[in-house]
Length: 263
Ligand SMILES: [Zn+2]
Image 1 (tube, protein in one colour):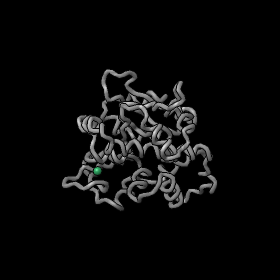
Image 2 (cartoon, protein in one colour):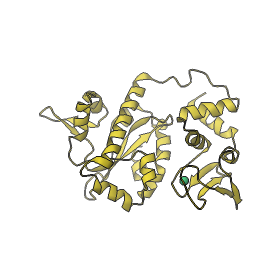
Image 3 (cartoon, protein in one colour):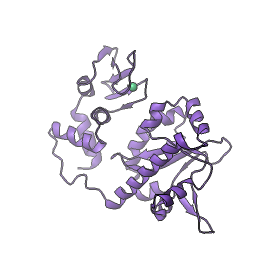
Image 4 (spheres, protein in one colour):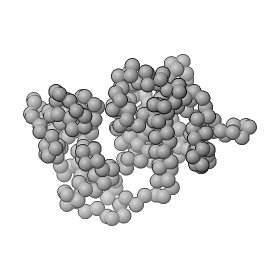
């Protein structure tokens, strides 16, 4: 059974309304069910479950997804753990080696995740990050969304990531391999992303597979940029979840251009 097959089988084994009802008191309104969002505090219910589409969506905080996503979030599990737990409960037998991952990809994903956290940190603490935060605010992207999607900021100064990798005694070669930094003619390193908002991209297993970045200056081309490591190490089909996950953030950017550019 492929990952996609297991994912489909698990989804088909549950009615999202039943699963959500164990955690949220739902009221039927027209075709949908409505309740108070379990992922943020609110005074009026803006959490909607569609039995027809088998998805949930919160119009307050932007949380959205299918039954597996809901279970992942509500139980505080990784996507993989949630999928296995739901499969077990539904009596779907899963080979214990199903999730044995290719070592190299996993190492690179962990490396990517560390970088995502670094850029996210810069969004709050870098001396020039005010502009980036103002930009996100202007676009109506909420604090909660920024944190959920680990959005980040790459300063205009092109030596920040390179400096971090060196300081953290990380492998500069790894950053170069993933296309995040480039070696210049004088042997020093320069960052790929400069003056950009960073969107980490996650695959179906919840691993960070790479980055999309939007220029803050409207005159800078290209407007959207991805690091080459995405295509190099990860199957395109595995990235779909990330596109889905960051859909809310991207939608608020008023474009699907960023996600389409990956393909
Ligand atoms: Zn919410």
